[in-house]
Length: 275
Image (cartoon, rainbow, N blue to C red; front, top):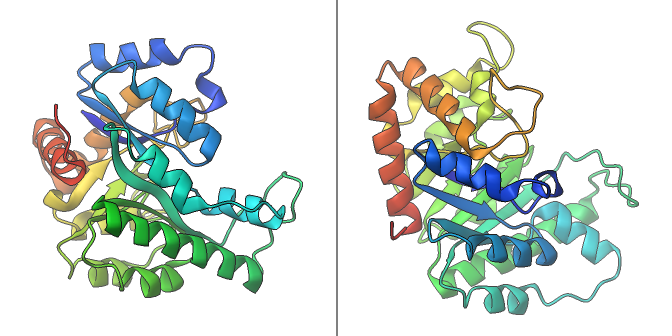
């Protein structure tokens, strides 16, 4: 099992991060990609990665984090910060980066998505895509309620390896069919694939799974969020990725071993993991 998207640097893991990591590897885990979303959390993610050769790092400013900094009037050289982090050999991707047009927040800023905020997010997205191109790194894309604008930008970067993280949330099957035309685009599924029941709200996730070849799929927890059934509502952790593998196998009428083996290989190829 390879969890391709986890936030071990989140405060939810402060008390037992090493125990969570140990549990994952003891139960068959092969590798983790820890995803930083801000400068402080990237530093913490790198420190965690240095504790085990099987933990890797993705670096990037999440669209929410970038919006907060710029609206606060912070003068941040995002490219230089990321270039500095990228000197670490554990860095395997730029991400998660992208656009987020839906984020009710309790932070000090009112994050209703105005046209101004959209433009701020787009500029930051482009800056980070340009850096990924310079560094020859794959990108992890966050897109929430922003598929049209996201694709308009990404269509200029089809020389990069791209994975859409937490795929399927509110996305029409027609968008998936469009993306499938490009062999460099991959799709990563989280615990949300375990939530819907056939014929009920959210079951369109199963349609995405059926459309996408297994060779283009990766699995992730996005912990501490989106814990899969039977742990829904609890803190997510890397070992729970097994439930996502099981659901994909069920929907695609495959064995768990087939899904685990192929998604592991997909992750190793995409991130160029040396494990």
